[in-house]
Length: 337
Figure 1 (cartoon, rainbow, N blue to C red):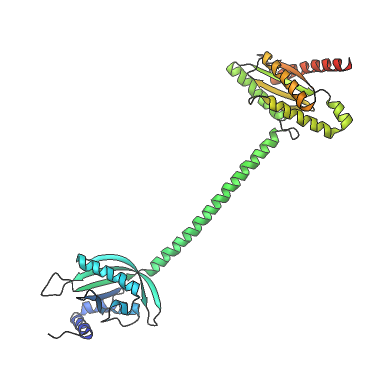
Figure 2 (cartoon, one colour; figure 1 turned 90 degrees about the vertical axis):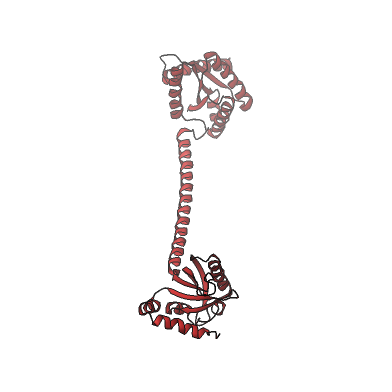
């Protein structure tokens, strides 16, 4: 038996096409790659036919050649693996591949294809043996490039969004911090750090309403420094400021967490004592006087008032202030006596 050469087989194939004008037109003008691969008995594959689109893609003659003759080894082996799987399964296979090939100048090119391969049988002695693979490959390289570009664009956008989100979060943190600082400035006395008069009055009215609502007691202490004028007159206002800060710190350290300390004006401080009876307030006042004297060497006078049913903060503070005046008169009597 005389075996046909690859050229003779190619000619036979084209002769078959020539006998079918419509098939010939389809083969010659189909825009996607079409090819026929012969399955060799040694397990290799040889291109037996390729339409013009396939030849243009490869850019060189490929008929009668094994794949490694015009494809890089890694690509050829990857394609061979698909071919072997199709032969073994004896069923059509559809897949996407990323392949490289050599152009007519020998330069390596890359692309993406959607490929369909169909097993064919042309053996009279064994009808089940796959003798050929017919394939159609659609070049989707531009689609992949567009998708990759879109992915890169999305990554850039996501990075920008992430950066912008981080910037906004940072700005929000800065804004919250600034708002906290502004609130602190609006409610705190700049010199002593305790509440200013406006805020201690607001807190005082709130505590009065709370005491009425829950039926609890509330007392206030009105405090001033006994020798504050003398400190200012003999040591200067700077020394007076230091004395105020030291006394405020001493008072704050001796109070409970729910007690509220505010600078009422000049050297006067107002302390709100929630859930404290008049007796509790007197014990607190004595403790504050003793601790302040020990820590600062400065004596303080204290006026005490306990909430009545008809009280406002103004009337409650006024009674404490009257008690403070009485305590100051007693202090001056002792000093002068």
